[in-house]
Image 1 (cartoon, one colour):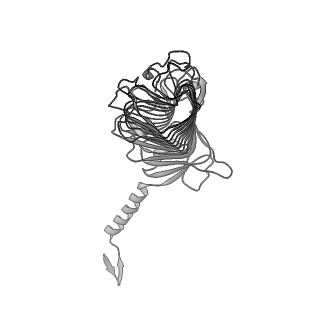
Image 2: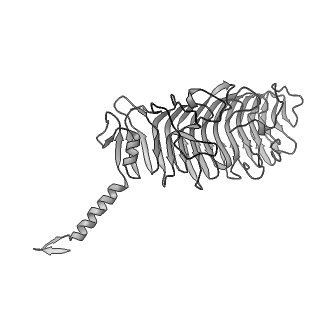
Image 3: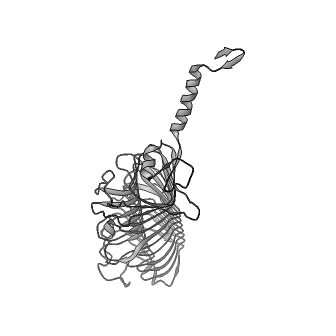
Length: 417
């Protein structure tokens, strides 16, 4: 310190250090807005991508009501949020005028075009209070996704994703996803999706794929197309190589593929993580081929040890309400109404599956075949309650009237995640 006339003044070194400190703080985070006209008193950008490019990591981008025809790439820790302005509150991200293009790392299934792509971020990205609308995407070159987290984690809250159909024409191609989290080159990515709406997708609503990918889906509304003969849709999916997570308190309906050669499910676990305490709990499911399907093509490696509890299931068409083609699961406290085949099927058709399951305290009313169809040697069944079912518990469908087509085809042949 320098002392002049009994006044203590900071040295140049201290002043420089303080200035550098303020600069570092400013570089760490800022809050800006997007919109024309600007609805805030903040520094404003014309497009979301310009704001993302300009701000440092940790910043908040507030988006004024309006339509934003762009694809957005986020590769830093950020908060992206729609905000109201007067009587308006709709922030809509739509495809660019020239159509969407592939903008992501190539998924094992092919190129990806995402409307919002969160990629390889060193910290979480939060997205809230906006709509992602795929209508007019003009994309035919691979998978179309509304919001995609690749090797990145974060939270999606109070968001609507709709019309994720490549070129706006439903097809049998396994493309067209609402909200997606996946690992491509990292050991883990965790996405929380809550209080959001996903509908009018071509293939899947909310998805986690590949080892290390984790989806926490809570309080969402996911709606398929209803009876359709073009594509087998799934509502919420954990798939491939040990994807994990939890699926709780969602409403998922209308995933209904009309041919019997394949099938749709409201909730599909397909080679999910082994003994990972995955919970499917408190959901309302119905008007679909299957409500819940637990499947593996590698028994003992993937998919065991899931709890399916306290779900309300109605109107499953063509197949079973809950199909259990893995081992060591707990199926308890579910209420099942009006299932086309059985309320719960302990399924041995995935080779070495359906074993060691605990099925108890479920209420099953009006199944066309059995209340519980337990393939030989597949689990413990006790203290369930049945109303107006042909057979409370059976190991044979010989006396059941099943839908036309391949009778009880191997479950593995029914799903295309």
